[in-house]
Image (cartoon, rainbow over all chains, first blue to last red; front, side):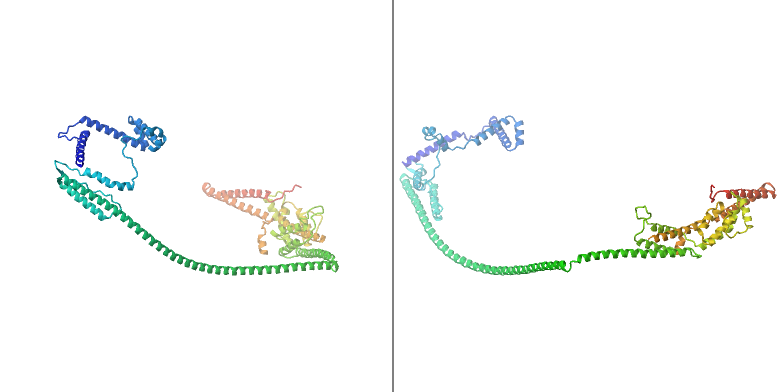
Length: 543
Length: 86
């Protein structure tokens, strides 16, 4: 039976080979024929496809290339649109699995089709027991196929299949080496292409099968042993680890407990110290606060007592004032009146004193003005005194009876005028004025002889004849000739009648007046000063 | 102080010097004019009259006359005189 099956397999293989060579057309010919047109078409098609595919791919990733590709390449727009519509359709369509489709359209699909033809093998979860059970079956099934022999009449070629053992992670390496050695021996036997008789081949195949079965069983046993050992070892290790963990846990617990106790002790000690310190500080602060409060209360009490004392004192004073000091206000008003009287008296006294001083100064001035010194008068000191006295003089009279304003007072005006007169020009004495008048005598005589509008001859003759004139002396009130006038003036000056002398001189005309003009000015200034002094004297008498 | 005040006093020309000043001006003017006439006479005498004496005296006379006229005018002028309308 095995032999027949192996021969049929051989035939089948030969048949498939021959069919495959026909279908593919890859028959190697000794003289290769060239097909330029077909090659050209194929290459062109490939090139165009490649060009469009590349363009499409680039156009999808680059917008600018997409524009160029769509606008310039024929059918490119259609291609891009169709690709995008296909892509959108695939992306938008819900990915329904076959099971979901079945669940959805179960009524239509399930009843009609039980199995899809040419479906292939469906993937299923492998069951270990089934797998283990299938291993010897597989070997059994494969062994008749693999141990094919090309049988001639009674001899067959020995071709043994190698032992295929599923090795796991627990399989020892020595077992794998053993299996590999057996497979090498089988391969060596196969390579020797030993031809044996049918009976011998069957014996060999049986022996091979027995070997394969024993190897598989050994594999199974060794796996079970390894698993058992692993489980035992694991259990032992787990128990050891548990024991170790428990001891370590206890040690750590004890260490931690002792450490925690120490830390707790330290923390308690620190806390106690801090609390004691805080307590002491608080006690000190409270003590200070209490002391301050006590001091404040004492101060408040003293203030209150002082206020009470002040109140009592005030009441006492009020009663005393109402009693013994009742006339204190009258006394105060009397003192006030006395003060006013003293003030008025002071005012009057000051005025009187100033008036007295002013009078004395005026008298002094008068004496100076009447003096007959040969030098000009200097009344600067008297003037200063007058100024200061007029400044401090209270109650100056009004300049006029009808004037409403008190200033400027007449005394002030007179003093300022006196000052302006004497500050820039000198005041001559009577003696000086008399002397200067006498010096004018010769020229006066000449001028008295000059005719009106005299020329050079008139002047010459007047000068000549002036030497022949007699000088008059004494007063002659009636005569108006120049000699009499000169004599009168001289007499008046000698008698200190300056005003009358000036009056006579001022009445002159022509050259005699021109000659006397300077003397007139000096005499007038002197007269003005005397008049001002008289005014001051009169004003002082009114005070 | 008094010296200072004295220095500050106005120094005016004395009125009686007016006549003397006029005399000074008149005499000096007469002298100058007479001198000019004398000079002109001398030159004229030398140049035109063979050094005779009369041109010199004539020049002096002219000068004196001119001086007198101007002096008379100076004295008659109203400079410094007060005109009083009686």
